[in-house]
Length: 211
Image (cartoon, rainbow, N blue to C red; front, top):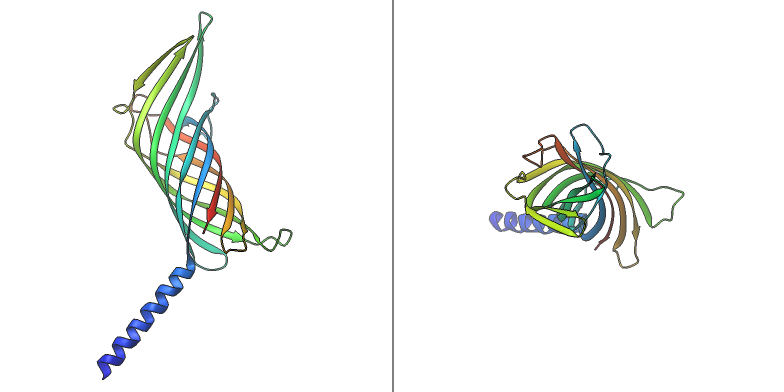
C-alpha cells in the first residue's frame, strides 16, 4: 500500500514538474542581417569595408522568473570580411566568406519599462557562443575577372567568443511574441591560419517570433 502511495505521489510530482517546465520553456525562430568584419584581438571593429552576412536559426528560452531567463540557440551564420585594394589604377575586391553552425548560450535580464505598452518588454543579454565551420572561401574580383579559392584547409574549424545585445519583445494576443534585437558578436579565437591575429566581429539586427 505504501509503495502504491509513493508511486502515485512520484508520478504526480513528475507530471506537475513537466507542466511547470512546459510553461517556463518557450521556443521560436529568428533571422538577422549582419555587418561583418575580421579584426585583431582587442579591437571591436576593423577599418575596412564591411561584409554583408546573415543569421537564421531557432532558440529555446527558459524563464527563471519574471526578470531573468536563459536562452540557447542553433544558428546558421555567414561571416567574413571585405577588402578593397587598388594597384596601378586597378581595383581588386576580396570577399572572404566563413560559414558556421553556431550555438550561443545567453543569460537575459528582462525589464518592463512603464513608458512602453503593457505588451512590451525590454531585454539585455550576454553570453558565450561557439561556431563550427561548414565552409570557407575567398572570392577576388579584379576588373571583370573573379577568382574563387577554397579556404577550408586554411580556416580554423571552430570559432568562439561573446555575444552582447538588447532588444524588445511585443506580446501577441495568441500568446506568442514578436522580438527585435540588436546584437554584437566579438570573436575571441583565431579564424585564419595564415593570419592568426584576425577574429570574427559582427553586428546585426535580429527579428524573431516566439511561440
